[in-house]
Length: 262
Image (tube, rainbow, N blue to C red; front, top):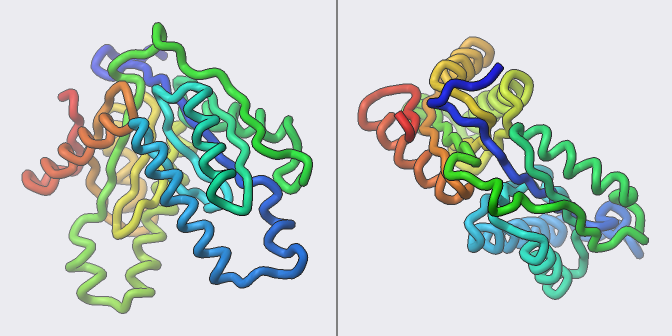
């Protein structure tokens, strides 16, 4: 079904970064200290986030040895630059693949298959693979990327100031898990926890009703109340900033959903 004019079709470029041969590397020549592995992963994510962010994209850590980025505007050379930076600064290399589709889930699926076809993530001979074709300038529009910024209602009052930190974490994670699951299943969208009580999602062409449906689902399933601000733009950074402003409107007005184009 063709979306209404108020919700143009998205065209999201999604990139997958995968550390090469990471599992075997962590145990060769003997198991490495977990604290060192955690430090490497967190520093690598911070660097990838900054590199992609400096090019107007968003990067998310996923499982840390795999990272997902929204990279509208990044061409093949930009991806190669990110790979080279990793190879120059870390004792590991990274392979990357990217694709653009109207559905973020489909784009990530294509990018994933391209890496899988190049060899296993634990194959020592698969190093610094780079596959994908960037979204051409002629095909780009000002509404290609739709970013939603979700926030738990009164997380401080309900959880942080009332429960111990681990129980608070459980409540927030339950909300995130249900939101992530439902957005992927019902709306072909990808959601990522970004700290505190915040989740950022890269979405398909969703309208107000779709976001309200999602918030209702999370509340009914795990008793976590959410609000969301949504922006759309040519790049992930611009769409994300619009989403943050719309989330502030939710906080000021007490609303559940605010869209930057309404």
